[in-house]
Amino acid sequence: MAPPQLRILSGLEQVPAAEWNRLVPGNHPFLRHEFLHAMERHGCVGAEFGWLPRHLTLWQQGRLVAAMPLYEKHNGYGEFVFDHAWADAWARAGLRYYPKLVSAIPYTPATGRRLLAEPGREETLWPLLRQAAVELARATGASGVHWLFPVAEEQRFLQRQGLLARHDCQFHWRNRDYRDFDHFLTTLAAKKRKNIRRERRLVRQSGVRLRRFDGHDAGEAEWRAFADFYQRLFERKWGMATFNHGFFHEVAQQLPEQVLLVLAERQGRYIAGALMYRSDDCLYGRHWGAIETVDGLHFEACYYQGIEYCIERGLQRFEPGAQGEHKLARGFLPVRTCSSHWVAAGGLRQPVARFCADERAAVADYIERMENASPYRRPDPAP
View 1: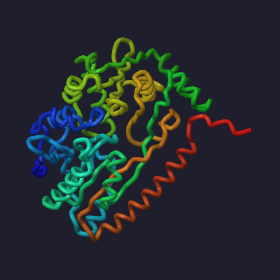
View 2: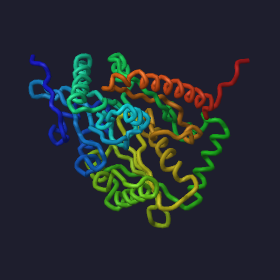
View 3: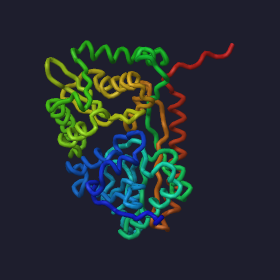
View 4: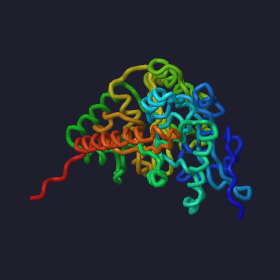
């Protein structure tokens, strides 16, 4: 059989959705063709935001056998693995840091596959994808290749290839076969349990009603309301929003059963919303916005509704997004996240390696401190 042939795609319209999705395990929403292509179609990625698609695909006998979502980057925006210090080091050395190549889901700090391959062929196809990414970096003058938030198996493979490893911390919730939300609360320390009940009570007493929608149920009014909340939040805090109404609506139509939209309604109008997506076993929190302030509403919409949904649907994990020690008191525990990095500037590899080692040690210490502050009840001491 002839070896796989490489094709570099500037857009996912160049590959059939069924071919791409065949390689996506567990129905991961952010890796599906529908999600990635919708970002391209609605201008969420491209030159304006510094994310240029350079997806790697391997074909054999007319069949897609492996793929890597990949972007040429001209800034550090929307990556959630911060490398400003690296860019400064390159500049001090008289080198150009941009462009760089990034394998990630834009603006989405969620763990997931970065090396897609036909099951059982990872051992032969993953090295080809890694080699193709490095060769593309060399050919385009990119400063490096960065795999962000890969799953543990991929991270181990990339480390065996000699790449540099970075660590960070997020807070995730795990389903311990809870019967319902009250069962989950019984596993928390009394102070934490009391605080969550108080926050939920404040929302109810404010006259707010929470409504959940999937892509089938949410209509034009719901998506326009949520897009408005999202847009206003970005204008108030960060400047320019990257996602838009067209993107939200299209993904909901294409992946209706993988969408969870939580809207808060008061006095007949929507005042806030949270958007999440699900795979076969995990819920991913992504966006929030509000036009009114209500005590406890952010926690209710973004966390407690998601936990209830996971319990009801039997999902095993809930990743609510990056950072946030405030999640710890609400049942989310520290989890190490990883990234792998190939750098072209050989003279800078050693100082960057030292940076990564120091960072990993600091993250390990932080996770230990957070674990010691677990919100869950301690087992009774042995008699």
